[in-house]
Structures are given as C-alpha cells and as structure tokens.
Image 1 (cartoon, helix red, strand yellow):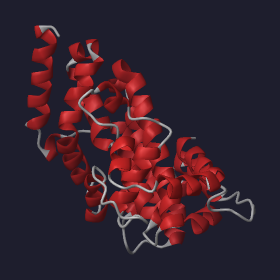
Image 2 (cartoon, rainbow, N blue to C red; image 1 turned 180 degrees about the vertical axis):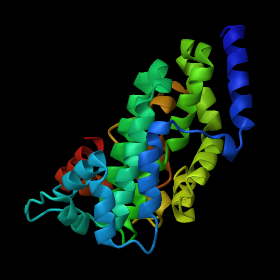
Image 3 (cartoon, helix red, strand yellow; image 1 turned 90 degrees about the horizontal axis):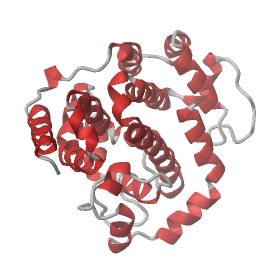
Amino acid sequence: MSQTIQEAAEAFRHAVGGATIGELNFPTSLDASRRVLKAVENPDLGLAALAKIVVAEPLLSAKVIRLANSAALNPANQTVRDVRQAVLRVGMDPIKSLAMVLIMDQLRQTQRHVGCRDLSNRLWERSVHVAALAYVLARKLTRLNADEVMFAGIVHDLGRFYLLSRVADFPVLLEDTVVLAETINDLANHASDMVLGQLNLPASVMDAVFASRHFSGAMPPASLGDILFIASALSPRRDPFDELDARVIPVANSAVTLGLDQGMVSEVIAASGDEIYSIVVALES
C-alpha cells in the first residue's frame, strides 16, 4: 500500500470521525423523498391524506402499486390499479420503507457514487434482499412487526452508503478497494449512528440495526436484530465490503457457530420464494 493511500485513508477517517450531525448533507435530489418520509411518520396522518401525498410523488406511487400487487400482499391475485386502493392495501409502515428506498436509490445514483458504482450497486441490491428476506422471516417465524423489520433491513447499511458518497472527496482511495473496504467497515457504526440519527428514525429501528451485528442464538428469532442477522447471513447477495475485508468472519459461518437452525429457516425461504421475489421486485423497480 502506497503512502498516498495510507494518508488518504487516515484523512478519510479523520473527516468522518470528526463530523457532526449538522454537517451531514444529502444531495438536494433527496428532499422530496425525505418530505414524504417525514409526513408518513406523522402519527395523526390518515390513509386518505397519505394517499394524496403518495399520488404527488410518481416514483413512490409506482412502488406502492407494485407492492400492493405483490404475491406477499396480494395472495388472492386481485389487482389494484389506483394509488388510493394501493395505499389502503399496503398500509402506513410499508410506505415508510418505500420512501426510504427512494432516498437510498437516489443516493446510490448521485454523481458522488460514480467512482465506486459497482460497490454502491452491490450494497443496494443486498440491502433490498435483506429487507425482503427479513420481512418474510418475521411473518413466518415470529410475531414480531414484519413491516418494522423490513424498514430496518432497508436502512441497516445506510451509513455505508453515506461513506461511499464521502469517498468522492478522497479519490485516491478508489485505487485500492481492499483499503477502501477496511476503512469503510471501521467507520460504518459511527456513520450509521449519525445518519440514522439525523433522519430521526425510531429508537426500535436503530436498536435493531446495531443489534443485527450479533445473534442471540434463540430459535425462533427473539428480536428484530436476530431477524436482520439471519437475513444478512442467508441473503443470496453477499456483502461486498466484507468480501474484500479479510478481517471479517462471514456472517453465515458465525450464524452456524451461534446456533442458527439453518434447516428451519431454509424451509421457510424455500416455501416463500415467490413472496420474497415479489417484495424485491417492488422495492428495486
């Protein structure tokens, strides 16, 4: 590793480590999605008012209709074609997830991610698959709030998305993806704490994100964090940073060590393939 890359990595750590919540700036293109997210979090907002907000955002409208017609939410195959009916079928909490998906997708596509587009795209695909898998596992294996765990799955790597956008200020790091991955992994918890805090996400979601780094060993899963851990371990989309960082023990390996009943989970996943795929499509499209 050249001295230049060492210096860039150290400067990157210093810049992110010294940042405050007030210094975190997202691209202006995210403003509309953030307004939607804030409105949806209003406990006094009714579904009729929510439908009006969703109609005003074409991308969100399309995602809500697609989710309403997914195999997971439409087992009777009764097609919904208008936003109001889609909102009634989907409900408040999943629309929060869809608004956050738009924020992350727009962040992924910003010009500040151009130099690390492959890593950004792979992280995006993994976040979506983890969220879909977590939703189905929560519904099938537990009485936990499946909508909340899907939302937590979507945002669980938002800190690393933010870090990727900051790499644009330290372009020399792009010359060595291993050093880049190690640096971002070291800063991920700090960045997640700042970014999720700035978005004023519920404490339960933030707790689930940080708890997902570990597994309690309880089967069926006992918490949102356990569900996220399992979804991360068994997701078909691998973590691009952990693959580059030799210091990281694969989550799937540690899950087996900690007592995950992989047979039980695999049966649920196999029996729910259409549901999982339909949610992935609704989130990604």
